[in-house]
Image 1 (cartoon, rainbow, N blue to C red):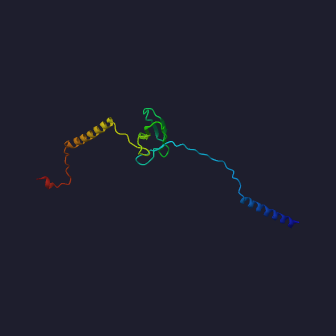
Image 2 (cartoon, rainbow, N blue to C red):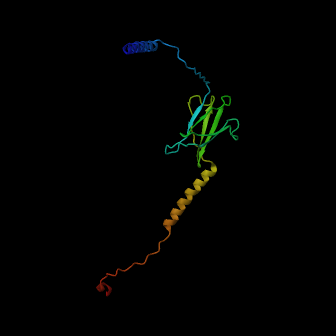
Image 3 (cartoon, helix red, strand yellow):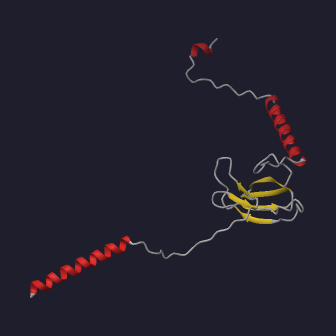
Length: 176
């Protein structure tokens, strides 16, 4: 009786394995949920700020001024770890948008054209701020002061330094 029971188990095991293999071959409906995405075509500008060394201005303060009111910030934020900031200006406000990026005393001012200002350029026109009249005057005064100070330094007469006699001079030269 023992041998019959084990034979019965072998047949049941083969039948179950066969059904399992057959069920794997039959396609079944996947149980998943759908994902939807949408987009809106709005012009954006990705601004990237870096030091002269190539290091990004991470977490730098960004202030955006609209062309209609250049005194009041339109948007404020900060750059990410890679020094990037995404500007999404109002397309109805055409003109030059000013973007000021500052960090630890360093900064830059960008003029971003929105609208039909510069139809031939794509992206951002980067411009460093020009020097104002006060800065130009201070720089000119520094250059003039440096030139005068250098000329006066080299034109002053030098005091003669007393010559030191060597202790190893020969006594014969002293009796001349």
